[in-house]
Image 1 (cartoon, helix red, strand yellow):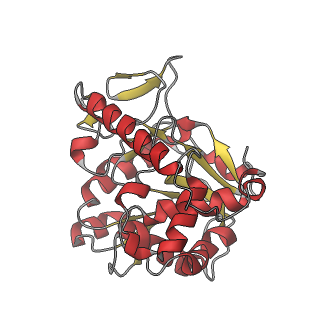
Image 2 (tube, one colour):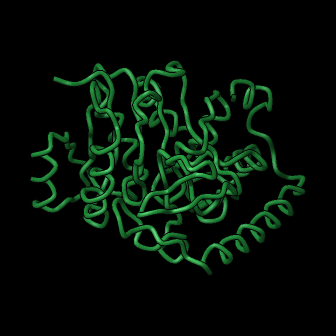
Length: 300
């Protein structure tokens, strides 16, 4: 018997320890899971971790790791939701993200649209790192031009009605030739959300440490904002460990030590990236894929 809502994530063996020991542990400890199923798309977990998840009542869906899991999860999420009765779905990363407070109320708010947080001080890194071969040249320029100067939606955490979440994979298809490399999902999601509308969440529901301008402190392994309140979802994003700004990131005492040098390096890279994007914005050959009115009229 399924619950009313679901939290869906995806992991391979590379992230399985963090999935079980930090993401899942923090979820069980802090989020009211009444009426919420936990679903893990399994891209090659070890037998040990599979057994642990099964014993905890986590639903596993065996996926095919034929591309980067961050992209494959949208295809497999569509399969999971095809014949389900779920109402609302929360999709999250699980290799660099922890829950520190209850977020179950988000399932009951603005239930007719997508909900996601934007990064405060970020450049669209997908515009730098994704493979242009995933798109036709004209289509890439259209989408990149449309997104330039818009706040970056971080898709490490987002919610939506089950039917809309299921439909994302279908909507991806006409926009690109293939969906394989890292960053393609964020590029496409940003385009679709800005075209069709989304509800902007407070950054505390996806607190991306590498790009936030909001002061925070860490006490006994817990992240607090400037008012001394616990931050509900903390995301130590960065793709590579060298760019992540927290050492020993995880859930529990003795963890989460801010780095001193890395944030300065990252800020420098962001500044260079912004300069590069501003320079490219002046390219008169860049087209706009969708009207600005359509793209932003439903964002709040």
